[in-house]
Amino acid sequence: MDILDIIRQYDLAKTNAQRLALDAEKNVKFELNGDTCGVFTGRDGKMRWQDFENPSRRGDAIELIRILEGCSFKEALRILDVTMIPNRASFAVPKQAPGIREPDEIDRRNVAAVKAEMTRGKHLRNSLAARGIEIDDLPDDLIQRLGFITSCTLISKSKGTPYKVGGIVFDYEDSCKIIRVSVLNGTYSFTPSWGGKNISVGPNRLFNPEALMGCTGPVFITEGELDALTVISNGYRAVSIPGVMNYRLLLDKLTADGLKPALIIAVDSDPAGQRCGKNLEDGLRKLGISCTLMNGYDGCKDLNEWFMKDPYECVCGMAKAARIALKQMKHNQ
Image (cartoon, rainbow, N blue to C red; front, side, top):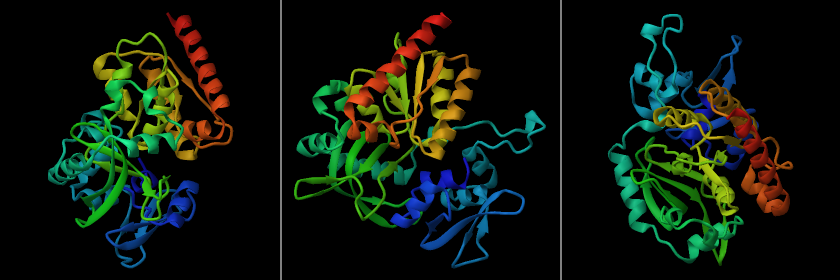
């Protein structure tokens, strides 16, 4: 989890130019407590950040986490999954995925606000349809975890200030994930001018982890809920991880429950997604779990974008990946 991962996780790239630079991982700038900051690589090859408006405020990923979370140095190390003294295992900070923390007071307030406004109806149906997903193609138990808010006031964890958001809600009971969507004259825009796409309300959670339990076929692992819904609506199983830096949530789930399903890694095709895919692949192989890495989506960033561009080719691509995974699974039995 480096500085770029943190910027994505905490939605610190506020403007369109900042988000484009973050996607390209070049000349990255972000907002921190109202100040504009930049990311640079020092002569030692390490990535650091600096506040342009307050030059004395600068540092590495650890210092950035300390500011965002208001935590100690050791707690920041735990969040970042860093070992303090690599050569002495007895002093290593225990590995801890960021998403396993319990909700705090702001989390509980924000989750309650979202659930009070969340509805199921035409906005949910139409917004999913705008991404090529028909709600009638989804299992009933999964539909119960979906909703839509047209506008909801949340409290920023980094600044403590109120802001409004609307879009598709994924309900995780003690937390929520919101795909930002604006509604105007019957049009559903997934790139609203007033903010980025994804908002995590409370701790990060795996989406649809039940798909891993007792399955005899392959399970797709995606980087986003819409990608997972695309897979599910076409008859396959899917689980989504909540962002590239939280891939350990999946590894921890598989380890804790002693699961060894056949997995298809279908994360985003951008550089961050490919790093995540490699980390997942390495971690799964260490656990002795069969996995197939799905590469390329005909020039698209992810499965949902590919499905929007060419549904037939996307479905064929998923079927091909499923056949490879099944063949590999039978070979390993």
